[in-house]
Image 1: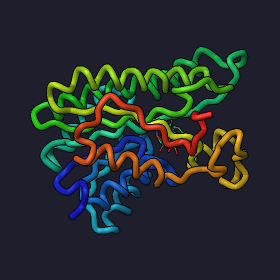
Image 2 (image 1 turned 135 degrees about the vertical axis):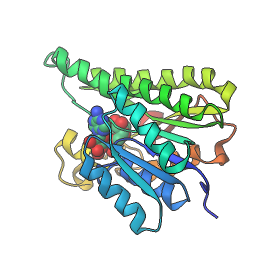
Image 3 (image 1 turned 45 degrees about the horizontal axis):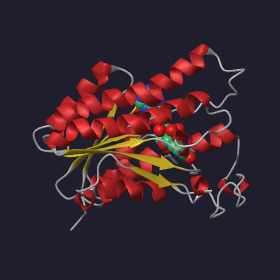
Amino acid sequence: MGRLDGKVALVTGAASNPGLGYSTALRLAEEGAKLVVTDIDEAGAAACATAIEDAGGQAISLRQDVIVEDDWAATMAAADDAFGGMDVVVNNAGIAVLVPIEQMTLEQWNRQIEVNLTSVFLGCKYAIAAMKARGGSIINLSSVAGLVGMQTCVAYGAAKGGVRIMSKSIAMEAAQYNIRCNSVHPGVIWTNMQAQATGANDPASLETGPLRIPLQRAGEPLDIANCILYLASDESNYVTGAEFVVDAGMTAQ
Ligand SMILES: NC(=O)c1ccc[n+]([C@@H]2O[C@H](COP(=O)([O-])OP(=O)(O)OC[C@H]3O[C@@H](n4cnc5c(N)ncnc54)[C@H](O)[C@@H]3O)[C@@H](O)[C@H]2O)c1
């Protein structure tokens, strides 16, 4: 028996490999969920769906830009057609443009707020509409940068801090429908975003000394996927409005 048998789950930003959405989609499928995987990278999303099917799971893939409202309506309609509804929505798609404030353009600021925060508002709005009649779980990807101040994270951190508190407000509004909403706060996880943001070639070349990361290593996407799996499953039935920090102790110092 899988921990998500009978559930339908949507994961946005599922194309990037290594990436948190890709790994989460595979992990949720491994536990029995039927997956809707989306991304602006249509070929990457299709490759994620193929990997799920190759492993014996069920998935459909769609091109979806998470900042376009019509794309949300189309994604939920496609999920309904394919699998008859929705139980879990993972708002994972995001970007990181890490620039000191003095060099950051208004365009870079606006883009990060749009892709990292406004998209989550849309995702939650459409998730509630889709899950209102049967209950469900919304999982929003924030960051350690949404909890503490970090250099070059003015816009990224503002968006992720917004995701954190918005998730709590949504938890309050959606509780009446038995829809739960929680945020996940990864630390330094080795993905394409991390490689791009740091310019590192491999996880070993990241700065992981004890003052930055007490466990002294970068995390793997599966470390985050397993937390999301818990929040997606009925094991977390009494958990809403909470924040899950998966950061090897970074923000405990
Ligand atoms: N990797 C980390 O260390 C880390 C730490 C904290 C938080 N996060 C958050 O976790 C999430 C996933 O991060 P990741 O490291 O896997 O990133 P990634 O760059 O590897 O993957 C992100 C995916 O989102 C997609 N995407 C970007 N803009 C989109 C849009 N407008 N519409 C649809 N898809 C879009 C990209 O195409 C990509 O496939 C992000 O929200 C990120 O901010 C990551």
